Length: 496
Image (cartoon, rainbow, N blue to C red; front, side, top):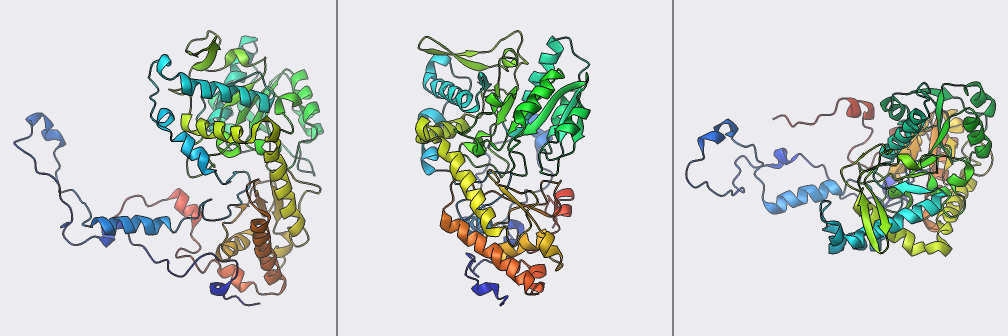
């Protein structure tokens, strides 16, 4: 099989990309292109402390040179608008442009958090409407829009659980049970609430092991934190029994709703027995997750936790929307505003587009797409857990590893074939994991192209043509970076 990736049918990358020096390396010797206004008169002596000791190091570039520099850098990036983005556990789906247009309407985009209530009744109404939809979709009694991200919502959920237990006089309950397949922020959230985590080993099927769970249920248990479907793309089929066991032990159940797009309109976590659920609206309902934001992580709660919801929150009094800023039992404010309004306007638009009669299509298409990918790849890549998956499918490098090819090699080769790699080495409970989430927005043609590329990689491996996989990627300007050192020791300042 040829390893000439320049002619590979899957590649969407041309050869016109070029090395891009830093701005300062582009710059002319003298900043002749910079024109700054002169200063009239002498600055007040009180400002002397702020006077520059050395000349400003401004690169001498013209406007076209500056613009071209940043545009060329942008062309190095892969984004959801340029191609398939199959990250598992971090939903990356296309964001309909109509949602962007709605969020940018002047009456929505240009409001100020401190405006009087009577001047923002429209946007308060939309936020209140979204609150109602999220409670109905999730199956809970109420919701707070305050949390600014998924991890923030996770923290808020545990803060409410902590306050609820304290109100019961059960301050001694500090143990939080966390499955070994859980998201990595769980222990941090528990620690910030004065609690500690105990890991629960998963069973052979990738789900919570009931016998293992029972071993840890005692008078110290404050909560169980769980994701359903979990990070292996598997539905926790014992969910009702799990919740009942925790409740019988006196604890509460926190739900990580990062994977809610597998359930929307089909099943409701509140009906399964959970006490609260954070919802990554930026993943499930538009504004795709990634790139550091923006995001939002509203938390839905049942009657047990409702009294402890954060403030401020929106309530309706007749035809008027009011912002409630004080509540005796509330955990208080966790954000300076009502929430990430721009994200919520997109979510409102996305849910409105589907409506009550079609919202279930999100989950149905997401699950269908993931199982289609699984069905095409399961004969050439090892599948660690049998049966149907939910919104994402999990493969491993077990069969390729026999030829010296690892998950990282497969992921890097995908770059040469024109695709962003899937999530690699997560969840941690699976060796050589490859987690693929196609989402509900991708067409069969796109999924087939991706699967064809994965099949070609597997065929290369079986044919013994492994050097091309070890060398990949060869097309990008930057090839195999030392990602560990880049994260631990980033070079953030340019040195002349």
